[in-house]
Amino acid sequence: MQQLLLLLAFILLPGDEAEKIIGGREARPHSYPYMAYLLIQNPEGLTACGGFLVREDFVMTAAHCWGRSISVTVGAHNIQRRERTQQRINVRRAIRHPDYNTQNFTNDIMLLQLSRRIRRNKAVSPVALPRGAGERLRPGTLCTVAGWGRVSLSRGTNVLQEVQLRVQGDQTCRNRFRTFTTQTQICVGNPRKRKTAFKGDSGGPLVCNNVAQGIVSYGASNGTPPAVFTKIKSFLPWIRRTMRHLQCLTLAGAQA
Image (spheres, one colour):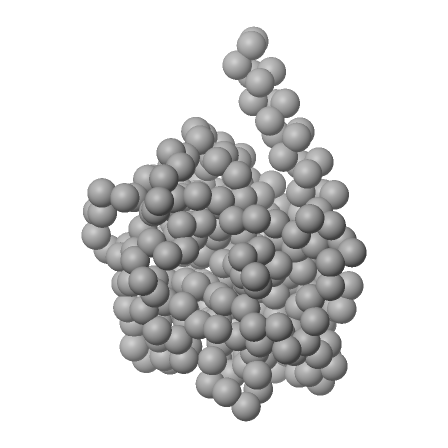
């Protein structure tokens, strides 16, 4: 039961408020042009997650952010305002990894094909993905996570927050989470510092040296680091194959 509570830490359940960065600060407006805010409709109600642009017509997020229908907002700083920079787009198709496990959150990755391409500008543009599986993310690497929601267990905000976190050795997360898998997950956040991603940050990117290396997946229910991120480079073949397939489906539909 304790392990289940830990795994549920980053899932935004119906009725919960979006929660996010702990120990961070407000980001400079539009300094993360790849960030996406996901509003997810389920039979139980609305939930929210983070995500990030990886192409003009694709957003990447966590598989546990799946819903019956999803709308994506890019170019946002304050999600409660209708800023001129914002573009809101519906999701055409949401594809979870076929081996995603709802019990232990392995393979927690999902691609969202947008119903139309975003308009690229200073406030909206994709982030780079790892170029190959051979790239190694070493412990001690300083990375950035951004998201919307609470800045503590009890205080919220509507503006984008940012925090810098260091990659940890795998053993740090093995000691904390029985479900941690070295092959497909990254351990992030110094256990001695009160800085981490939190509930509504699910699906947001871990960006290291301007490359999206991870996806916020799960962590401790009280918001103490470290947290577990999906390792993007482990899924590069699936990502490329899925985007090609969905693009072909869209072209076939347009020609029919």
